[in-house]
Amino acid sequence: MLFVCYPKCSTCQKARKWLEAQGIAFEERDIKQDNPTADELRAWYGRSGLPLKRFFNTSGLQYKALGLKDKLPGMSEDEQLALLATDGMLVKRPLLVSEDFVLVGFRQAEWEQMFKKD
Image 1: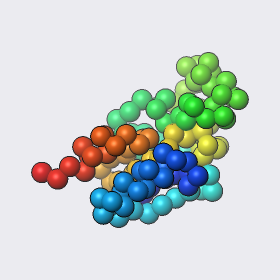
Image 2 (image 1 turned 60 degrees about the vertical axis):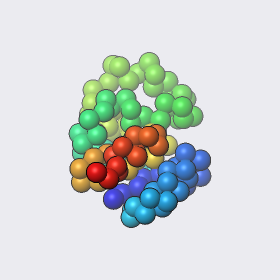
Image 3 (image 1 turned 30 degrees about the vertical axis):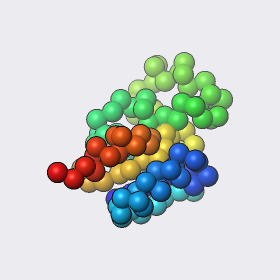
Image 4 (image 1 turned 180 degrees about the horizontal axis):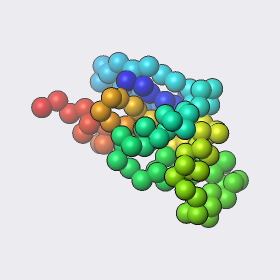
């Protein structure tokens, strides 16, 4: 499982602690040092079942500085994915990527549901 995060982000730190507490093995990737590619983002977006807008860090400085709230609706999916691939700080984090699913952002209840043991 791949845990894509920004180590200085408090939400990412909470998510990492949660994964460790559950005994879930993961490989960590710093989103600022190793930004996801457009192809990775396309695959993750497809697997997530979420709208593409959910992959944007809408509270981030870059998102606001670029005026993306107004620009995104006029952009194609390919343009949005290409834009996300230019800067890891535009991407909502953390991302938890497995073969079967992709979780975007850390909502503990959502993560617990995904890992619930029957």
